[in-house]
Amino acid sequence: MPEFSIFDGHNDTLLRFYQNDDVTHSDFLRGMDGGHIDLPRAKKGGLAGGFFAVWTPNLEDRIAPDSMPDTSKPYTPPAVERGYALSVAHQMTADLFRIEAESNGQIMIVRSADELQSCIENGVFAAILHFEGAEAIDQDLNALEVFFQAGLRSLGIVWSRPTIFAHGVPIAFPSSPDIGPGLTEAGLRLVKRCNQLGILIDLSHMNEAGFWDVAARSDAPLVATHSNVHALCPISRNLTDKQLDAIKASDGMVGVNFATGFLNEDGAWDSDRGLDVMVRHVDYLVERLGETRVGFGSDFDGARVPDDVGDASMLPRLTAALQAAGYDEALLHKMTHQNWLRVLRQTWKS
Ligand code: ZN
Image (tube, rainbow, N blue to C red; front, side, top):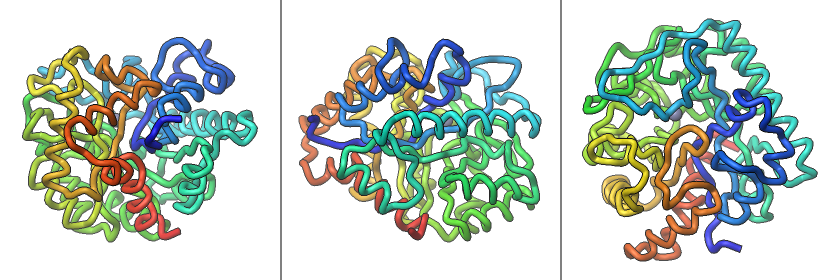
């Protein structure tokens, strides 16, 4: 058994089933070649579960959501049509239900912090249903009510493209995240209803204006599930010091993203630069946010990650690198799952 149970802020594993007809639920449960997460590799690496993203691919390309090889030009795909996004959301959400059902109790979709805590304590792989972009939600928020009842507990108002609610941050290097306007009127209503229902609002793909609109309106801790430090890697997807200070003030948190293009200071997607780069981002975040506001948000199955932590089974290398850098056991327990539990308990109110 690995020493640390790592609960993770972001994966795109559901996208593997959606985009590859030959990847089956049983491959996930029994183990498979390729990809970053399956159940045997999760057990081996101490991956206790994570946010499972439902994300709608643009029809004109089949890229993974965070794996753009060329960010030298700002990348903003066009908006996707709601009917299409809704059908994708149904399929990917149903896939998660089916995997849970086929797992014989090894996997549970969690809807409360108590459920998450119990899963971590008992070695049940915990999944949070997360929408990465609200394209499937209508402006009357009917779909939000329905998906909440189905288990939706986390929502990114945008991926890096526009919706009826807000404008996503184009992916660009080097670039400030301050690109484009903030939330629409419907977006402000969405924030309010998420607060009332206890759905976490994920800020990771927001532009800066949208970030500040959420910060001004939301009564929940501010959370970026899978983002890094702009001062260390100046890509538009990363968080500025001012944004980090607002996250701290709200008692929110940041999940450190393993995507190499969001880690490397030159924005390159090189995966062979060692774990020091990740340790630097963690150091910066712990210094700026405090020990209780940093976790992980791997982006496994959605991005090119460092070779040294190339899939879920290799996570102990990351905690070992942090131990070597002076992080003690108590702090690593916080970063690996206790901080997520704390923020989710505050946000979900159950
Ligand atoms: Zn993402």
